[in-house]
Image (tube, rainbow, N blue to C red; front, side, top):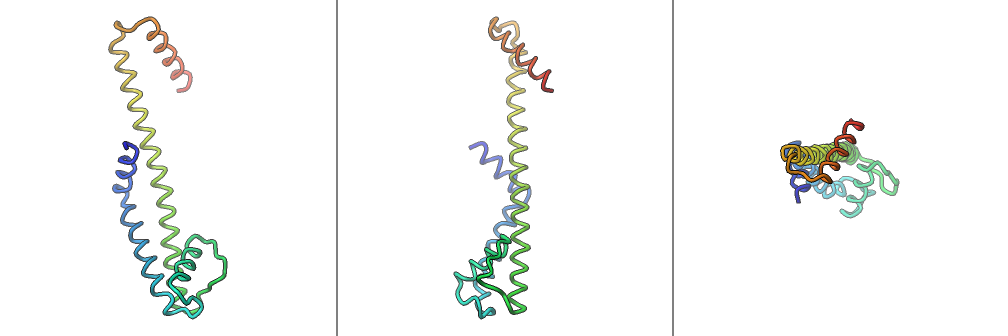
Length: 140
């Protein structure tokens, strides 16, 4: 649950939710409008497929935009889709960086707590603490 809260926090901070919802709306509207301008894309389902293939840069070629309006819609949706994919990559990287930072903070908090209670630790706990200190010193 904590991971989802961190991810949602990053999505809100970056404004990615607005961009993704905007893309979905633009994609839906473009899919509804495109069949009216393109004779080779007769149905809304074909339009959804064509735009998906366009913005993912797969480009099977089973449908092709031939009118100026159809090509402009395709360019707009394709560029917007590339932006959303790039944004998603950045959000995921930000999410993992924030997750690693949170884990480091928790680990450091436990470590400091053990140091504060040093006189109360058993021999085994002291040996474990010394091993972790050596490991961190070697790694870091």
